[in-house]
Length: 448
Image (cartoon, rainbow, N blue to C red; front, side, top):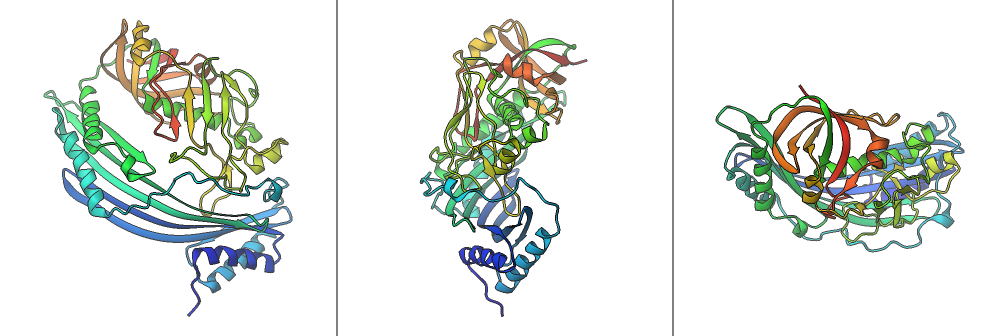
């Protein structure tokens, strides 16, 4: 029988075999994962899962020709064949002058302890009880008619990366989360759905299930009996959940891969003002227990905290090695990758700060607007910045939130939307992207 290697030995063995087969450079990425999941619907068990998986990949370079392969089999014979195939592939693909590993002198010499791993154990029954408790709280809200389902999960990973540069990193990380989704109904037969969730690195940092369940139920009930409105120009307020998504659009526009391809509407905006002067978008990859924290990037470069946008001015692109070389710039340690994938630029923990007004004060200044709680569709053109999304939420009249509205579309151009954005001060730093309530003045609204 073939020898089955540990994850650490498999990573080292693949690099050794790649060099034996003629690779000029190589790196291997290995992951041991444990996933525990439980789901229920109407207080009845639907899913109980406990899965453990292992996998390794190998990225090789023959001159400037790269190739990547992966396997979930850690037997020596299988890994030997994998390395042979990777080198053969690399010798036949087109050259890429921008590929390659990091300069060893630039790679991290030590990794900070970011407290990213929860040692505590939780079985499927405990997760099921959490899901049922959140669903029970949601179903107890008057007007909620039934559940769309609730679930809880825990994921734990042991990650190893090593390369022929001599770099080696090894760390563990975990995540826990739960959600609940419900349907509300009124006497006229109108039905609306909504949800809420909580996520954290540590299980004990999750929000209380009765709080999340109640929020989900109340959100669904408030949306009952929506009306349609006429097409017009209106001020748009995005709740924090949607504001986080909106700021994610900004990070996509400063992604080095998009800039290098010329496919971003911000491609000519480096060191220019793209947000109001009072706003700063700060990145902190070394946040303790941060949702997107990382001790170094996926290419071994040490991460650092920085203002991506400093008092309105765009200070940098998010660059991995490939995009940095293509743009003739220094990398910014933004590389991320999963098993079997090549590195790509990605942000870590982001916080949009600088707003001074409360959400109530922000809304009080709006005579005719919308408070948006749901967005639909993918109507974002990252090349032109044109933005058009289906939406639902609540009417704002003379500074007060009125009844629910639906079947509308909001539209504008992202450059102007970002530059005119007004942020509130209700920042909650629980997520990988953190943003307060924001107002986007004078957008086009298509209704009836």
